[in-house]
Length: 186
Image 1 (cartoon, rainbow, N blue to C red):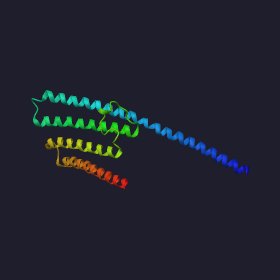
Image 2: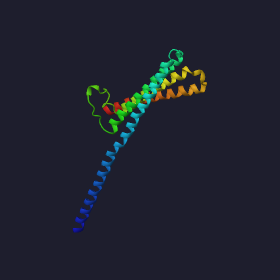
Image 3: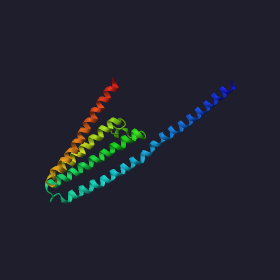
Image 4: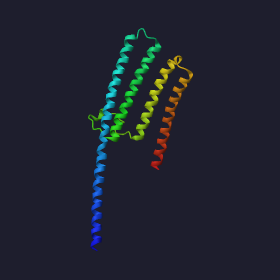
């Protein structure tokens, strides 16, 4: 009888010890999410670099506007659009990634906060990302077609194929998300 009681106490003691280790592990893992924060700060700095590139391109276009051909001007404008789309993509990644994996953003004033902030889940983030990637790819493809005489048919086919792959991926993401949302609601 005494042996059984001692065994129960040892089992209870080792179970409590395991629970303590489990708690410490889970707490460490949970706090570890903050290791992602420097990545988002780095992406914010990347936006600053894109801004510098944007203004450099705008300056170059401005000083050559009177002598540039329409084609050169169009390429410059498409480069500005491409840079702006990429910066927007990074903002989506920064805000959504931070809110989904690190912490909620508590910013004031609330009326200045974009409507999608705090409401974009992981599936919504995927759709926004693929949409931005498709838009960036389309702009790049337009730039390629403007200079299509410099490329072989095979190079053009590869670029179109890559763009089509992005478009199909976006459609598949959307369909998968739609099917997933329908099965979870029924």
